Amino acid sequence: MKKKVMCVLLVIMLSIVYMGCSANVDDEVKIEALSDEELEFFNGDTFFNGEGFNIRNQLLSSVYDGPESIDLFGLFYAGSGLEETITDEELLSVMAASGISGTINQLPSPCEKNSLSNMDAILMKHMDINVEESGKIGLDNMIYLEEYDAYYYFHGDTNYRSLITFNRGEREGNQIRLYYDDGFFGDGAKVLTLMEIEGEYKFKSNQYVKIEE
Image 1 (cartoon, one colour):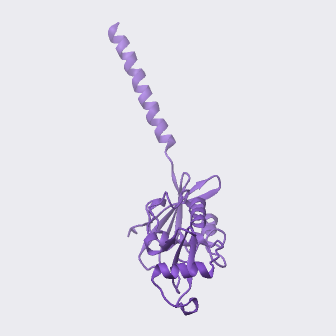
Image 2 (image 1 turned 90 degrees about the horizontal axis):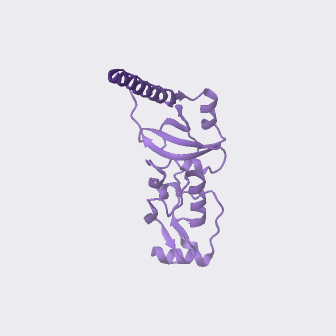
Image 3 (image 1 turned 135 degrees about the horizontal axis):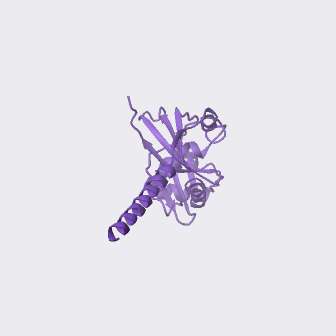
C-alpha cells in the first residue's frame, strides 16, 4: 500500500514538473524579424530623420548600456530642439564663467544654451529619466549657471546626423532592436534597443555589436 501511494505521488510530481516545463516553453518570447513596412517606418521621416532638427537622431550620438549612461554632452551638443532664449546679461555671465574677455560681438562662436527644464523634458519623454537620475556624463564639458538653471558652451560646428539608416531590425516581446553601421562616426556596427510602451518607443540602449561572418 505504501509503495502504491509513493508511486502515485511520484507520478503527480512528475506531471507538475512536466506541466511547468511545458508552460516555460510556451511562454518563451520569440525573436521575429521586422517586416519591410516596420523597418521602413524607422528609416523614414516619421520617427527619425525628417526636415530640420530631430532630437531622436541625437539619441544615437553616443553608446550606452542604459539610459543613465548616455553622454549628455553628445546628446545636447546641438541643442534640445526646444525653444531657448539667452539675454546679453546672461551671455556675459557665461563668458565670465568661461574665462572669456571682450564684448559679445567679439565672440568667435555662438553660445549653445540648454536649460535644465528642457533637458529633463527630452530625457523624460524618450528615456523615462531626468538629468538628476542620469550618470550626468559629459556635463562637465559645459558651463552651468545656477541663477539661470541652464548649461552653456561655445561651438561653431555640429554633431547632428541628418540621416539614419538601419540595415535590419527584430522584435522580441516589446523590445525592438535596430542594427546599423555607424558611418557618421565611423566606429563600426551598433544596435539600438527601443522599448515599446503603450504605443510609444523609449530608448533603452545603443551598443556596439559584432557582425557574424
